[in-house]
Every structure is written in structure tokens, then in C-alpha cells.
Amino acid sequence: MINYTLTHPGLLAALAESGHGSQILIADANYPHNTGAPASARRIALNLRPGLLTIDQILDVLIDAVPIEAAAVMTPPDGSWTEAIKGYGQSLGGAVPVTSYQRFDFYDAARSPNVAVVIASGDTRHYANLLLTIGVRPEATA
Image 1: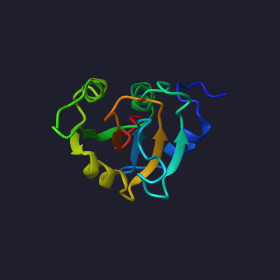
Image 2: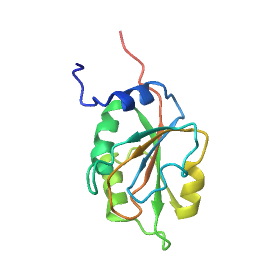
Image 3: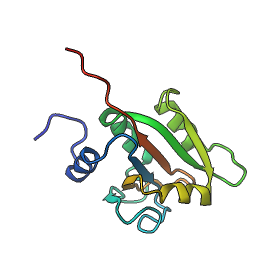
Image 4: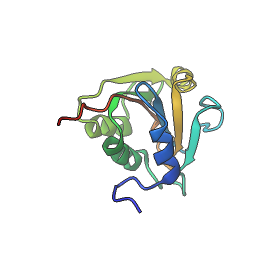
């Protein structure tokens, strides 16, 4: 048993196999998980039931697990930021640049060969998808 907040074996392995520039798609319950990302991406099903787990809950664990360099969100047709998107910005602390895409442009970005992990959430909010880019681990000091 590990003494760490992230204990999901498949997700731990997928993150360990990812590196700088790899991307993690945390997809809402409405997202086409199988066709909306490259076939090579490892899929992790955390969509236990509608509303569980949410993208916010998953993001909170990932923030502690990997360095996040950038994020991208899917916006509604009017380009507005939903409450979900505003929450991601707060969770990321404003230090991570966030790019917004309209629906089909987001799908294109999520089908990039850099997407290494797709996490299916039970989040039922519309336009709640989040695409994270892994950064580099801070240098260890002796």
C-alpha cells in the first residue's frame, strides 16, 4: 500500500509512463471517450455514476501528482467560460495558462497524438472537459 493521495493503479501507471508534453484529457460524462482521443491513449474509467467522480475531484488529485504546464478547455458556442471552467482556473492557481477552444476545435486538440491518458469522469456538466499538458518536475536540490 502506498502512502499517497493517488492510489488508482491504472492511473498511476499511465502517469508514470507520461512525460513532459504528454497530455491528460479529463472528459465529462458526455464526451466520446473512445473516439474523441487517439487510440494509443490509455483510458481510465472513473465514471462510477452520473456526478461521481467530477472533473474537479480528479483535478485536485492530479495537481498533486504531476506538474501541469498548460490547460485547455471546451467552451460553449458563445465562447463564455462556464462555472466549471472558472473553477479549473481557480484550482490551477492562475499560474497555468488556459486556452479555450470551441467544441470541434477541442475535439481536434484532444485527438492529438500527445494525448497519453483519457480519464472518463462522471461529471454531467456541459462543457466541463479539461485537457492538461504535463510540465517538468522541479529540479531536486541536494
